[in-house]
Image (cartoon, rainbow, N blue to C red; front, side, top):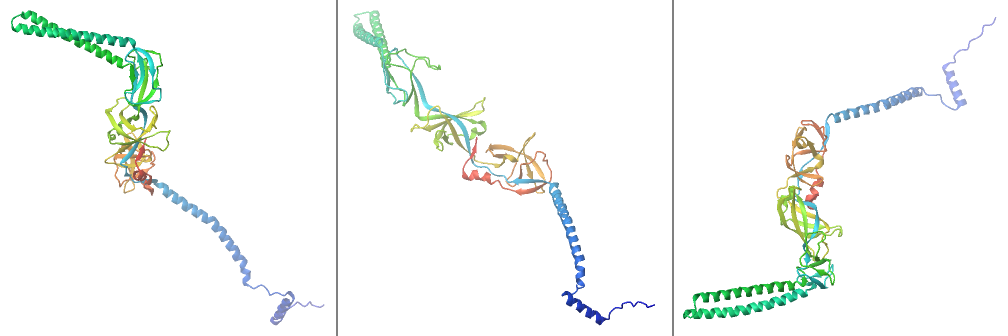
Length: 427
């Protein structure tokens, strides 16, 4: 029985020959040993990257949460610095334009309108004839009065000469004292009768002069209520809505009056030297220079306002009486205080309050006194200094002594602009 022969490992030289034979057959070298570890290293790197992707966002989220908690631990506020209020403030008030003078013209004598010379819209001068009234009865009365005056004058002349003769004869005891006194008294009575006749003539002459209706001042005729042949009576009923008996209505329009009611808070700053101008809707952009003529120097107890009269030159006739105008008063303040935004105010039961941040970043609530109102800004008369840091838009829940964190410290640049550009506006 033959025993199988087991293959034996080739000798080293033989293995080298086999490797060369394989290289010659396959055309490539066998994989180096170091490349066997590339796959595990790559897998480890992928695992580390996946782990980092999961951990880093969590770490960032945790850091952001920590920052947010730190930020919300204290209330974040914005502060503003009080600035000097403007010395000039523009007060805008509504006003009604009225003529400088107006009058209703009535007949002072009865008669028929013979002719009229001025219609509505006519510009007339003082003393210019507006209408003629025919009064034949009055003319006859005047002629009779003049005749009575002549009779009285003649009677007085005879009585006066008689009294003088009797005085001469009394010196020679030719007549009695009683008769002389009677002649002297008769002369004085005749003089009084002559003077009465003169007064009657003057009265009737004045009435006859009213036959010509004249303008009392320079102005414009705004109403004419008569026609030729109309019967007019002396006098009238002034003050009624219909103005019965009014012949003409005249208004002086070369100079106009505008009345405004200034609130009590601003009444002390309105004087005759206050600068003022008018604007109207008919003339956009145009300013009408005016002057404060006078004030009532008294506060109306009902409206708590001061009546102020403003005069405006209207020789060009641009403004019409009865129109609506806006009056701009430039109010001057000798000692302006500080101003803060309206958004910084807190309205508490104990008064108007502002929240100030102290040096230790703690809130101090201060009660202040409000002065002038500029719309979005108000003047603080007392309670603040220029170095205070005032919290803008404080919450209603803010309390005294609360620690806050200042986000920004913005200066109210908009507040300084009105002071530099012009007067602050106040409606």
